[in-house]
Image (cartoon, rainbow, N blue to C red; front, side, top):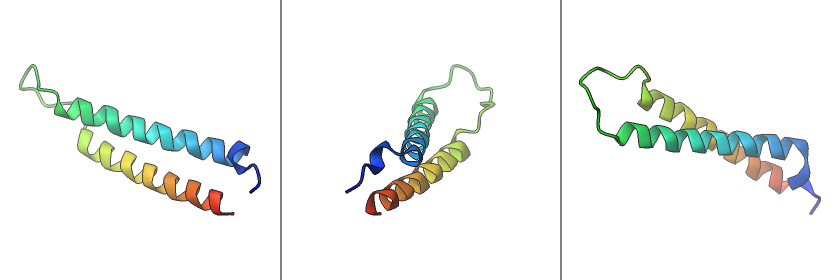
Length: 69
């Protein structure tokens, strides 16, 4: 198996994957905290979580395909 793990594409996609998973986790924590006031949140957490989850899934598939080559 070649050293695909040290290639530039694998590192960049890996960082994108980690960023998407981290933002998903951060938004999930923010969404579950109780509110201090009844004002609506300015950040729509559910659509951003869906977007981060989609990016994480696509990045994960790309990483798996890079490993198969």
